[in-house]
Image (cartoon, rainbow, N blue to C red; front, side, top):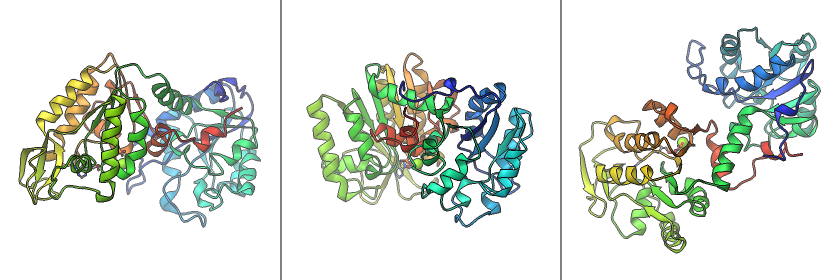
Length: 396
Ligand code: ADP
Ligand code: MG
């Protein structure tokens, strides 16, 4: 982190500061923000700049517009409204991103004013990291702060290109995300227990591989566990499985053995006769899964085993639900693991990944965790050991 310029080094008084935030928030039919977590996550940075008397120019994407100009469905208007409520000041929404509308709004700014540019992805040059678009963004401001950790794994004009054209700094959220995740990987408190679940091995193989180098205990659940069970020679019925990845899963098992990493797989499974909440279910041993049934959650013995391992951890990283937690019939395993992580108050507990965070929120346990990453893809790429373009662009 020491080689990344911090917002604390920026004297923002009177300056026009372009802040890349992640206001990619869900909005309902009435145009209300239904989850303002991402907006609130940017408040420390925005408030510091306002306290210093900066002119704060915010830029974000929202959704996946075509890149051919304004589209109502992807406007940042709902985010502007919610931000104004949260900071108790007017937030002026520009009609465009770098065009005449934005330029006029920025030219009229006084210290302490906030302008939100329209969705950067209304211009297809954003995702191409087009130099002219980056220059147009840079021309609006005197300094640049990146607080959009959730898009740091994308080399776009507003996340990477513009950073080379202005004095560039990491905002508080960016610093906290990168600092926490790299701290966990560089010097985890031991024993370090990594919990991995979710749907597919193929999505997570690099994360499993990276954590194999760091963790003392690796817990596997979710849909991906069946490919591991196949690698152990068990039958898995109609469970989610990836035949092309059985060999890789077998390699992982061997690697864990070599490295002395304790790798835990389910010993029992909740199987169902259909992918439905009202399916007929049964708890079976992992080596006796019936034909024609699919595993949709870890079983109670497994949950207890995993909870025990988690209770003994000094640090925990969790990515990926243990089962189809969206359906109440298959939420027990994920809930048990979430409760075990929450109960270990002595440990550093870090949660990453969109659905894992949603699960922790569903069980109302977010406050009990040390850190919840706001970046799904970005946190996974960081854990995999990949350089994030949005972070690299902030290096001195
Ligand atoms: P994250 O977003 O936390 O990284 P993933 O996207 O990898 O997690 O996986 C989450 C999804 O995995 C959830 O929608 C969940 O329903 C699904 N899942 C978990 N266990 C199973 C299972 N046994 N069979 C099918 N899908 C599963
Ligand atoms: Mg997901």
